[in-house]
Image 1 (cartoon, helix red, strand yellow):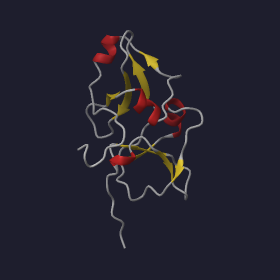
Image 2 (cartoon, rainbow, N blue to C red):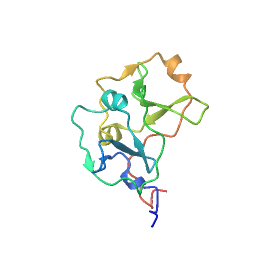
Image 3 (cartoon, one colour):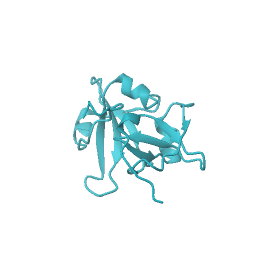
Length: 139
C-alpha cells in the first residue's frame, strides 16, 4: 500500500528527525527539506528542539544545502536566508525571513549571520519569503 504524500504548511518552521535515521528535516512551504550537516551547523542554534516524527508522508522539497546562510545589509533590519535552487536558474536566491518570530520558530542562529553590502544583497534574486505555519484559512 502506498502512502499519501501531502503538503503540511501548518508545520512550517518545525524540525524533525524520523525515528529510523539521523537526518534532520525542516518543514518549509509545507515540504520537508533535509538539512545537510554543514548547513545545520551554520544556520541553527546550538541545541535546537527536534521532534521525533515520521516525515515520509510529507512532500519532499529541495535540501537545505551547504552554503545556505543568513544575511542582512547594513542599516536594514531585514534578514534573508540565502538558499540554493538545484533546479537551475537562478542558482541562488534570497528569502526574506518575515520577522523575529519566524526566525525564532525556525530556530535560526544569528551568530553566524553575514552582513553584506546592500548592492551585493540587492543583486541576489528574491524567492518566496520564509513564513511560519499556515492554516487552511491563511491560503
